[in-house]
Length: 152
Image (tube, rainbow, N blue to C red; front, side, top):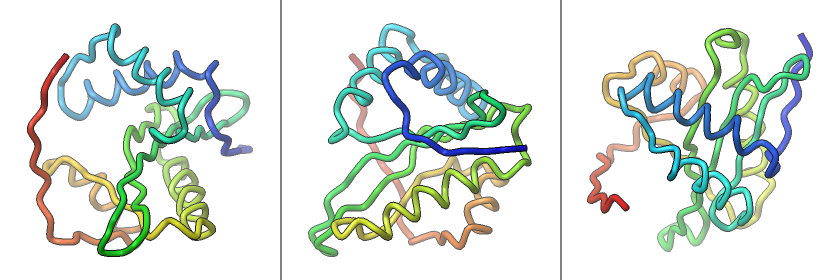
């Protein structure tokens, strides 16, 4: 198995939108609106200030994805990179795809003078993902996420 990691490009929009739809369905039982997710992915791919995607490729197939968005931390005088939209198709799970994507992003954070760390949120019931993150030396910082969404 030969795995490579590359930054996503606009022609990856459809596979990313599909993976995001699968992710929402598998983790939260939510159906994403194609009229929103497609243009949402396209907007991010067109504007790196919104975030970036990286894809794992195995034998010419997209085997996983990871996205980061950015949050300025005045306390740390640096940018926190938030990991989001992580997805690995069933046939590529348990092959180290997420670990490879995570380590790639982690190395970029370490190289970036303006970056001060990585964060992500995970469903409280997704204990398998939580264990994966702990195995990568991530810790629970003691914060709870709260939100007020305003759907379009």
